[in-house]
Amino acid sequence: MHTPNQALYPTVPLVNNFVYPPLGPVSSVGSIAMEEIAELARPEPNGAPFAIYVSIPYCRVQCSSCHMFKRLLPTRQDQEILLGEYLDCIFQQIEAYASTTRFSGVRCGAIYLGGGTASLLTPDQIKLLVRHLTGSFASGPDLEVTLEGNPSEFSCEYLDKVRTHGVNRLSIGYQSAIESTLKALNSPHRASQALASVKNALAAGVQTVNVDLLFNVPGQTEEQWHQDLYTLLDLAPQGISPGDYVVFPGTAAESLISTGRLTKQHDADTAHRWYQWSQERLTERGYEELVRRFRSAGSPLQLRRPVLQAELRNHRAWSRRLQLYRKASVSGAGRP
Ligand code: SF4
Image 1 (tube, rainbow, N blue to C red):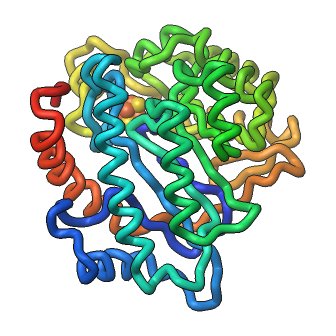
Image 2: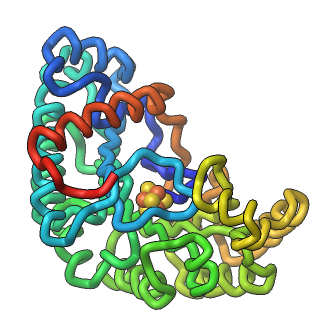
């Protein structure tokens, strides 16, 4: 799950990333097009690793201030088929990318399965996807494989399975463990699921557990924010990412605020003060700041480089391509 204002990407030092799905419709993918796409990633000739971001552009519900490209899933019954079809398309792209000269002689340092909601994939689908990627691109034993997801999917059983399939980092879209805050976000999970997901992830022995939470959510009080951060600090995941909530234009959150159905956010000075308070608490508990992300001392989290600039272009092209793909293979499924 994306934190609406802040997508969290791999934490290994990166030369460049590339994003699936790439530019252009499926039907136009050929060796020339793929070389052009691969050119965007520009792995450096010194052999420094690159990262791969695979987006799973489906969600269960529409969060109130989400401006990301995604589709809402139809029924749970259709979910596995639809995601399977989507993965088949991704596998073709992986092979096409891997066949380009750009990726010979360089290794992949990080794979990030993001969203939408990547945890909608079944453990078997994750296994297949990771196998396709590691079978197509060179990588080392230090490969970081991140699964971003929603707390409602992170049961003990699910986490045990994905860990054995190579996932060694989780990015949990926790957001809050207070029901009223989750309600304002229109989050797909409950407070109890948020708490359980972090406990389950730590118990499953996933190497790195990063947790996103939000402050200055409409209606959230300072006391609630303190409670949320203290709750998470007590759970002590390896990474904590406090994000200031952004109400994007044209979203449901903006409309609800403008019509008085959702409380206005606090001003920027208040949000900044909340953030400074959080910095102090995190530092006290042994976390160090990495561009608004904190890691516990000694954890393997490292600062990342910026992601591929072409992401927005990708998302536009991707939107077109996904619609084409769905019409052809899963006509009638889902809601826009
Ligand atoms: S879960 Fe989906 S709808 Fe909610 S913020 Fe993430 S991408 Fe947007």
